Amino acid sequence: MDTLQIDNPHIVVQKEQSRASLQEHHGTLDEARATLRAALLIAQEHTLVPKQADIHKSLRDLALKQNDLAGYVEHNNEFTRITEEVNGKDTATKMAMQEKQREIDAVQREHQKHMAVLHSTLPKHIADRVARGETVNDHHENAALIFLDIVGFTSISDRIPSGHVVHLLEQIFTTLDAVCEKHNVVKIKTIGDSYMAVSFGTANSEERTANSGHIYDAATCALEMIASLDTLVITMPPSLGETSWTNDISEIKVRIGMHCGPVTAGVIGTARMQYDVWGDTVNVASRMESTSEPGRIHISEAFATLLPATSSDDSFERPLQVLERGEIEVKGKGMMKTYWLE
Image 1 (cartoon, one colour):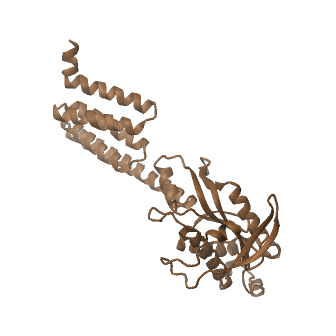
Image 2 (cartoon, rainbow, N blue to C red):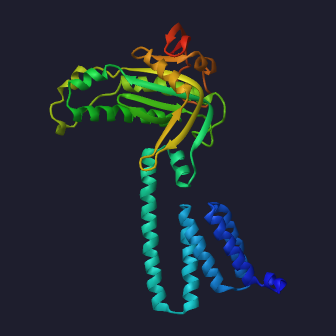
Image 3 (cartoon, one colour):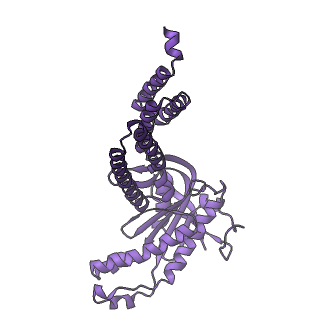
């Protein structure tokens, strides 16, 4: 009797469906999908049409859980097609198909909205991982950190309307965002008038080679940040009112600090996700910025040691220069030998 049941394809498919349900219950969704696909092949081989419909329905629901829109559409279409053939009720089936199509359209719209929100708050390569259901918790052995602060911004913001403050920061940070994207550097966040970015190397782009090239990327990015803000023309829309104060700002000056070393990077939060980096490397980079000078880039010895003078695959027009600053007192670190990047 047992042998007959084992050889019975209907029983075999039923057992595989039960196993897939257990796998899904335990959260091993990829294994559940593989089990269902194997069961589907058996059902197709033995023309078990109702079972094929059941399995396509299960695969459709599983695809929805995994944010696999293409898989959802594929299996929903197959489920609908088989159900139509089995039932033979053309009118009812057409109505069901129309309803399912509306559901698919709604799911697709929701998915697009979800992705738009993710891409507006997270770097693209991180947003894509989150959309796939991954937990982002990465260690980077030698990330290059950039900290930037606008010199004298507090005094500027104290004497202009709040709407002007927001518009001014938007112009500055939009300029910095464009520079980061050009140099394969990831913006992490802004805090007030401060800006933080990082170059991971291989994590920034799948094509990036794991070498000191990302250190060079960060350095040239910082230099172009200063150059771009030096030539930035501040404008205000007439709707914001009196803007004569812009004539008193000849150029935007910033201080920059840089350091490299190990960091942990990940996404925190659920309702409001934030991508951030942590570690002592972040603290040292922040200290490099706070002890920098207007219009200058202050770098640690670790960063200076790894920084190549030129890069053959970069369009930056001049070789980098590193000047020794000497030893300075760094809070929490004592005396550190540091350099200027020019």
